[in-house]
Structure formats: C-alpha cells, structure tokens
Amino acid sequence: MTLRGKTILVTAAGQGIGAASALACAKAGAKVYATDVNADLLTKMSGVEGIETRVLDVTDVAAIDALAAELPDLDGLFNCAGVVHHGTILELDDAAWEFSLNLNITSMVRMCRAFVPGLLRRAESEGSASILNMSSMASSEKGFVQRTAYGATKAAVIGLTKAIAADFVAQNLRCNALCPGTVDTPALQGRIQAAPDPVQAEKDFIARQPMGRLATVDDLTPTVVHLLSDGSSFITGQSVLVDGGCTI
Ligand code: NAD
Image (cartoon, rainbow, N blue to C red):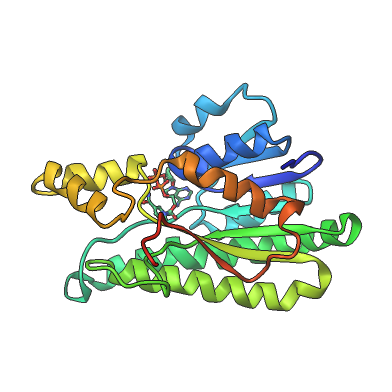
C-alpha cells in the first residue's frame, strides 16, 4: 500500500490516532501536513521525513481558510479532531453541546468546504482523491451509555460523509468515515484517570470490547492508509468499522 506522490493533511495529529496516522502516511510515502491546536505536541514530529507541521485549531474558520489558501492542493484529508462528552442528555448543558457540535462536526464541514476545491483539482488531474472523516462505533452504528453528544455528533459525521461522497462520486473524489472501537490513546487514558475508580473504569472499557482488549493506534493506521490510498479506489460513502467486533 503506497501513498507515494500524495499530499495529505491530518488534523489532531499531535497525539493519539492522529499522530499515529500522520506517521503511518509518511511511512507509506506521502508528504504529510500534520496539524494540531497544540504546538508543543507537534514538536515531536519535527525532523520526521515527509512530515511538515502546522498549528491549526479546527474550530477557527479563518485559520482553516488561511491554511487552505497557503497549502498546495491535497490528495488526501483526514479529519481526525474530535472530543468525547461524558454524560446522558440530563448532563448535557448548551455549552457542552455547542462545544461537541463545533469540534466534532462543524469543524469537518469547514475543513471539507475549504479543501474540497483543491481535492477536486487533484482528483481531476490524478484520477483520485480521498477524504476520511473520524466518526466512531458510538454513532449511528451503535448507542452507548453516557455518550449523547458524542453519539449524535459522530452520527452526523457519517451523514456528512455520505453526502459528500454522493456529490463527488463521478469526479473521483471519495469520502469515507472511520468508526473505531475503544482505542488506547491519551484521551482515553485521561477519561480513565478522571473516573472515580480508574481501575474499574479501565476494566469497563475493556469489557465492552468482545476481543477482551482495547485497540492500539496500530490496529487503525493500516485502514487509515488504505482509505487514503488508491487501493480503496472503489470504496466511497462507507462507515468503516474497526471495532474489534463490538457491533457484531
Ligand atoms: P487524543 O486526545 O489522544 O488526541 C486528540 C488530539 O486532538 C490532541 O493532539 C489535541 O491537541 C487535538 N485537538 C483538540 N482540540 C483540537 C482543535 N480544536 N483543533 C485541532 N486539534 C485539536 O484523542 P484520540 O483518542 O486519538 O481521538 C482522536 C479522534 O478519534 C477523535 O475524533 C475521537 O472522537 C476519535 N475516536 C477515538 C476513539 C478512542 O477510543 N480513543 C474511538 C473512536 C473514535
């Protein structure tokens, strides 16, 4: 699976799934723009072959538009940024809802709107271009407790993905959604440590995975690379579950 000759932008590439994906894309031969809101996290990427870093807050529409104007046309865009709100609808105040909506879905609308013109130019000249949007198994795929804002916004990601895929299918621009199970990342560890009983919280996260283990970021990156590569050229508009059998 090669990404040689491709230019790919990854959001939320400072740590976790985004960082592993940026590194995997570069290893597969792509020129990668690794972006994150946190400049400190990006420093560990500096000097990695094939990677250039940019600070980007995906909730800042002016910054998105400025970056799209600055960068060359992309062959691939991985919208990875997102946040988990923990709670039922009874714990979801308007501020928390707005925050989830903004980071999990509005940011993707704005990223796609800014970068699709360039992706379409590459699709026309190279025969393919690909968008990957980060959703989750906790979405329209499956309901989970304490995930109202998360499930609703990640379901919206799947709707956005299918609509973009439908609009541009004849122009060779593909768009898919990635739906992981529970992945061991700094964000997940933060949720575990914030729980009243972290040991029990980790056991509970593992218990909902039928394989009896959490996913590692390395369980996901081959699928990320595949969906951004021409190896997946007949796959579009799909929510691709990498969930260790959670939704069987
Ligand atoms: P993480 O916390 O480990 O990494 C998230 C990164 O996002 C951080 O580097 C952070 O600085 C960056 N970020 C936060 N706000 C940002 C903003 N406004 N603009 C740009 N970057 C920003 O998280 P993760 O667990 O790797 O999750 C990444 C994505 O994967 C999220 O969309 C999440 O919903 C999704 N996901 C995670 C899991 C899981 O179990 N970890 C499962 C399914 C889906």
